[in-house]
Length: 520
Image 1 (cartoon, rainbow, N blue to C red):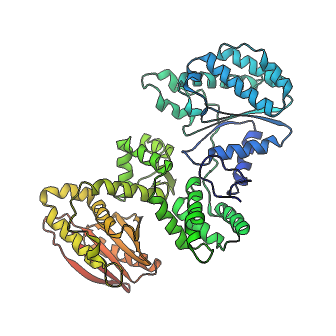
Image 2 (image 1 turned 90 degrees about the vertical axis):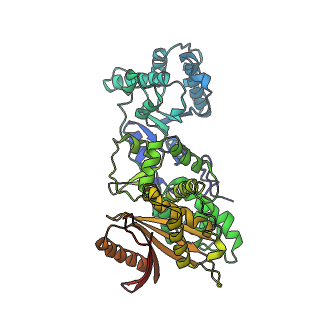
């Protein structure tokens, strides 16, 4: 029986998979045109599965011979010198040829004694002249090379052969595909800054790879449809696909992970064997509360780069509205690691799951530095019916700010006020509730937090006080958002940093919606 897969290569015969025929068509078109290109995407973004399916597709054609290798399994010693690299590279080519019964081509390589990259280039010419097919070279995990100069020399040889072949003065691979997290032009990030000669990329012959490897709702639906039909489980395929995309922005790992959690963790606990939209929210909650290599990599990349951390903080916690500029090295680095994405010309965190995981991590770091004991003890805020007394929560938060922060803390409070609220609320809802943020870009830099506790939903708008005019506009926006969420009651926390501020509360009615507001 098939399953959803989140580790290694996805195999159509063993795993429920998104139909990526359209993506493969686009990549195959590049190969047909003889293009050289790099598929660079973040970890666990479906790269290896994509080239596996591409290789299978090309192997069915009589005019192509695919040589597919990976640097991941090669030891660091392989990259210590030209001889060892060449030996390992040719061994991988032989392995491919043996699997495809290309005996004539194997003979070309068997007696070759190659000592340097230049001689390797001549041998490849002999190999290609002997073949009656177009050779396609695919190298996965290209950025695993521990000797960048050796690898760049290798690329330089391929570039030289490509340019000569264009003038019909040599024979070379019909198409070359390099696969990794880094684009070849980004390998300079791993080189010594003072080594300028390495900055001139030998891979300027490559065309841009613009194929979107993320999944849109229609593509996600193809996986769910196959699952529904095979397992006879009731699923509103399109609605569920849209909701999964809403949380994941089509990130391949997260799409499969949510589906896997619903199938293996949530569905067995249900009497009716069906998926609904609440199952997706529950699955998001489950994966956010568990560790994974994907999340560990996400947080590690933030921890290791303070500028990246600060930019993410400004986007998530301060609601900064920043334009996307790929020439900005911090934006470029964040996109390389899968943290950022371009949406409508603006810079955004790639998906809502990542945004929430980062927010959890940032609020947890702050929570460990704050003394909230006596303020946010959960039992103090539970009503007799088991639901939250949210007005009481906001009043207690207001008291916490008033008692714990004097004038000397204003700068810290202005920078971290909303994050402090999120850290304050976490222990109260933890275990029974789930909080999710919606950043609303406006002049007020709003941050809407949607909290579910049991089956109730609470919407809290956090904003900095910027006067009555913006306040009224914000109330209208909150009322509209409550209407979208089919809620009658909303909550507002205004951070007022004026010297003569007043700690007050108000019951407000706006456009038929009841809003409880506190000022801190």
